[in-house]
Amino acid sequence: MIVQHQPPLHLSYCLNIHPGESWAENLAAIREKAVAVKKHVSPDGWFGLGLRLSAQAAAELAGDPALRNEALDVFAEHQLYPFSVNAFPYGKFHAGLVKENVYAPDWRSAARRDYTMQVADILAGWLPEGVDGSISTVPCSFKEWITSPAEAMAMAGNLGVVAAYLAALHEDTGREIHLGLEPEPSCYLETTAETVAFFRDALWSRGAEVVRRIRGCDAAQAEGILRRHIGVCFDTCHVALQFEDPLAALRTYRSEGIRISKVQLSAALMTGGGKDCWEALRPYAEGVYLHQVKARTVTGIIRSWTDLPLALADEDGRYGVEEARVHFHVPLFFKGNGRLASTVSTLTPDFFRELRQGATRHVEIETYTFDVLPEEIRPADVVSSIAREFTWVGENL
Image (cartoon, rainbow, N blue to C red; front, side, top):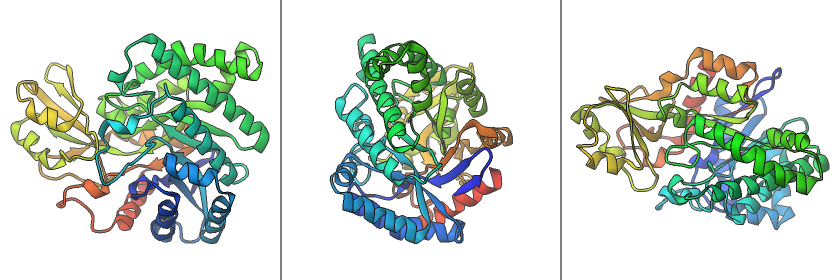
């Protein structure tokens, strides 16, 4: 939905909350769930879609123009317009083991590069005139998979290929599409500082070399293409997990000239450091997703665990912790449950003011864990839960 026209700001929710890897399943979710959400929050206006397309769904759409045209008919019938795609999970994302598999293939891989360009082609055919498109993707790789600087340069090179492709797509179609790397705990791009360093030291050097070769342009033009088409998907849950201030992080990217391709509004679990607090987290140690943990000690040291079960088992490592934050997306309206709270309090009025003043054009609610929330806090219905999140965002944004 259009929040404001000047500067433009579009709001949606990420459809990765709805299970489905095929395009048929995706389209059914749009018809059954997204249309129902629209009736709650934007019954008389056009409603933006934050799609999730797996590699399977993208391949199906790319190979069949009739499917793409059918989608346009559905969008028109229900006053829907897609402006963003989550192309982070390449493969399965529900009802089975996901964990670190969600980062594969990573940006060292031609498969990740080609899939992303395929998604861009599909989105370009669906974007309304005058609306730019965003695609979110993995933060280069899972951190422990990258063992040499050469691998970082390889990832920057593949991103350069995509930037050149998106520039050509813009020329051919008039549709501007940008890709957002999504920093996340335990990944190659984890903190704001690490992300800025990658852009400075790898993307704007190795990536620019690739753009120059493909486009036949000079260094300044190549950097301009990269800055226009490659940026950051700013997930507020992930930023808070690092014990970073979201407003300060947002301003850092802007001061560096790094595009905020999309802001994902989300909240992480938060609790104290006592034994009872850690026990309260046990119901969230489920087996589908990776739930990274960051904890701050009374002396200000940040400790990390790749997954919640590892933190729960590490009683010695938790010594001296005063606050822990867990990568488990809880609804934005979640007010707490016993010892548990959320990081939604880090989203201040000044942060929302920054969004309204042009920090980004795309905002997306991203709470994908509905199916794995413990029964005691799981809302009864996914549509009403998403509608409540829109209400929360409306009150704050």
